[in-house]
Image (tube, rainbow, N blue to C red; front, side):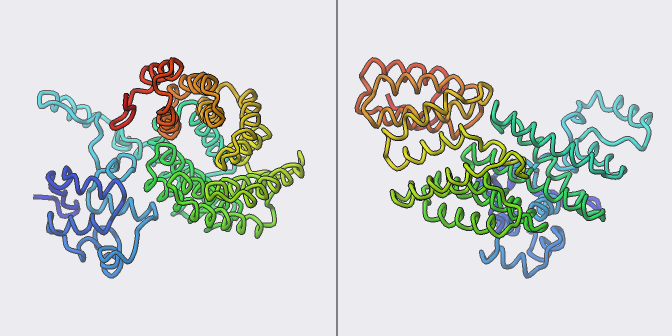
Length: 446
């Protein structure tokens, strides 16, 4: 029988049910609540009480009239209904038994004895308990700078290795920072925390986008947008909307992509401190959207605007750190990719090749991604040998980074080789592809 102050656990058969697993994975809380009601006997009024929601809000979710996207609410649902964190894309919840405490029966007395000897003030071994200790200290500008440095390090490692391994740490830090926002602090510190939380949410969304888990990515991008809106950081809101625009191109929703990047540009232009580098990046994202729609005139106009804005950049510009990646090689390669998306392969090839020569050696994902685009433009021009050679060069950095987006592109290139499948260069590429990027279900048809 559960303790009075401890929420009732969900039945194991429900937590292992494929329908429940899928509903949690995409955060379809209408389905989750319906399953909890029918399979666990927890009715909407009880769901509302346990998750700190109003009964009417729960009713709207079940009826499909409302979505729950805010991370605080997702965490309350996980805790209130006792849904393990990993099922909802969260870090391990404080109430989940840490693996370090799972012991065999004969080891139990020893653990109990250790617990008796341990000072009562020590936290448990789970990450949340350890991080909670820092709430006993006052935050300062130096603390905020430490957070920002860790985010920059996350981005560097994301470029080198992909975001799969980083994600648990990033989500854990996001939850920790969001927890700090609940406390009263001086405005400068509080606003800084909101900005850090927004960047952590965007980074989490990016790792899901790079893994082609688009529903999860959208949820975190939306969270980042809400956090940035709280402090009226319009430049960062523009940045998040630009990420969502890029994702829409991958989901074959070019009209959505254009709408999102247009909204991003509106936000950026309404901010007094928006820099030319930010506007240049946004114009290039606009070019991607137009190119996906097949609009040559609009694509060329957006490319021209991107270069015009880039020429206005001054060393003294107060660029936000998140746009520092958009340097001259990035402008050039994105220009080439926009032409490539439009089918202008002859224009695209020298631009991408030039940028690839200047690509940082430790940016494994960037090198693989841009080499794929170079190979694609070469193939579009009938340069089969060059294309296969370039694509083969992309395989090594692609295999070194956990990025389903890049791996998927290279498998798409293999599919594009269908008319040439028996050519020696195509067979050599296929052999190397199978060696470095093992086939996933349904791909690499011999």
